[in-house]
Image 1 (cartoon, rainbow over the protein chains, first blue to last red):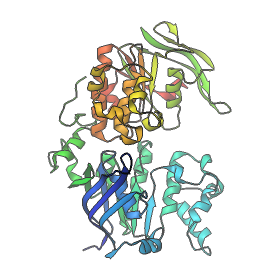
Image 2: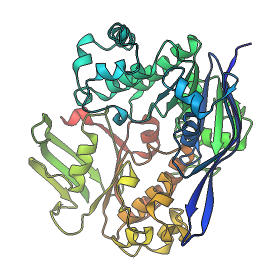
Image 3: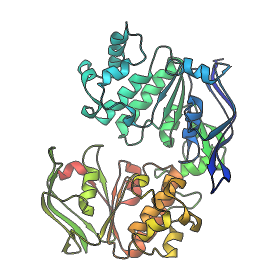
Image 4: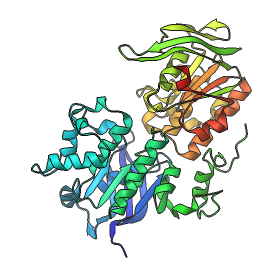
Length: 267
Length: 201
């Protein structure tokens, strides 16, 4: 049995907002969320925008906005992920692939960005190895982000996140805006990492990508995890999906029924 | 009655030429899909059709008249990121009013709830904001819509809801529409005809 890498129990995220004067109200972002990602597994989290997917990633990484109030427990390899433990593990054992390529520094050559956090003695050699792995030519290392295409920038983002010591990768919406071949490439890279034993948490609103790359697909709606479905159930008319919301999501795809929450499409 | 592009030429200042001699037409009441890889100039084409960018050469006419340079734009563009297309310091009621007094029925068709009108843009989700951007574009004088990756950022249900609502309105008013998307299945659902942007080079 493979080891659980990330265990989230009863996670709640609320935001305290001022509602005029000194009155405050708490807006719920996530409530009562449980999930587990094991080594070598890709777990996808899908759901509507505003359903709390990105908040989940931010809660794990400890990068929520200041007014957020977090309850529940997050464990990494069996131990509570405290602020002190995050400082030791983030960037070494836990890695994040952000949503947007604008997270790269526009004023630093991409090779140097990939070398950040690597052992200075072997950094250059390691960066070359990562470039080769992600099909980036050696000369690219000296280029700035604006000189690279969108697909190349995605590969650079992967190279900045992948380290030999990494046990958990959180990828937040790595595919929107990419054409089909580029999407397939991103998914292939995620599968490769899982095959090496990394636990991958893929956050996406792209159901087809989620079902193609993950074993299990967690579905969020309104801050709650409503169901975890087997990826193989996202097929045909979705009759194998256990939860009605998962079926609605699947059937809403234009390649399926293009129905909107039970209302059929007609033109 | 058609949106007609003839001999269009354009390139970004200092950049390579995107279009040299592009010609096509969108009949009123029809839906034309525009496809192509990222970076191939799809959004630029949308901005040219709406009059946000000025062509270097060639001509765009709307139901026989040249695309107006000032005043109301009969070709309305709906962007991929609604949060970048609204004024963050205006409540949603003002965002709508900048265009016209949007009838209650249009708001209902688009699923815009009355209580959203008093909210700030930051208090709505992307899908909710996009409904406002669509309502705003549906001015009585609008003849054509350009939807540039309008639902690419949304989950499947939100995407379907928005297209269900908009397709009904477009048909009822006999508007023409250009749908820019890299999702073939979506274009299959919506479009009478498809143009690959490479073909317009």
